[in-house]
Length: 152
Image (cartoon, rainbow, N blue to C red):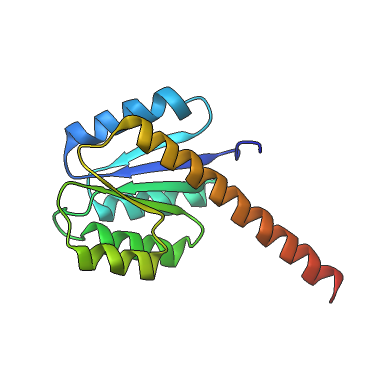
C-alpha cells in the first residue's frame, strides 16, 4: 500500500525531552514520507491539526501524553476524534487513570495505549499497523462512496 501524500504525524507532550526524543525516533523512520510535528499542549496540538489540515495536510497519527497541564490527553484525543474521526490515536504515558484510558477507547476510538518509557520498536510497529488501519478505513470509505454514487 502506498504512502499518503501530505500525511502528518503529530506528537503531543508537555515534556520537551520526550517530544524531541519522539520526533527524532519518528523522523528516522518516517521523515522522508510524512511531516512530523510536535506540540507542547493539547490546545497547541488542536491548532496544528486545524492549521495543517486547512493547508492540505492529512492528519494520520496522533501520539499524545495523558497527564498534561490544561486539557488532558483523553480530552484532547476525544476532541481530535470529533474533528478528524479517521486519525489513528495513540496514548503514550507513564501515569494514567484507567477510566480515562477506557473513556478514550470508547469515545475517541483510541488505537493503542503505550506506557512510558516506551520501546521504540513497539512504538514503530504500532504506528505501522495504525497507518495500515488508516489506509484501510480510507479505502473502505472510498468504495462506499463510489457504491453510493453508482446507486443514486
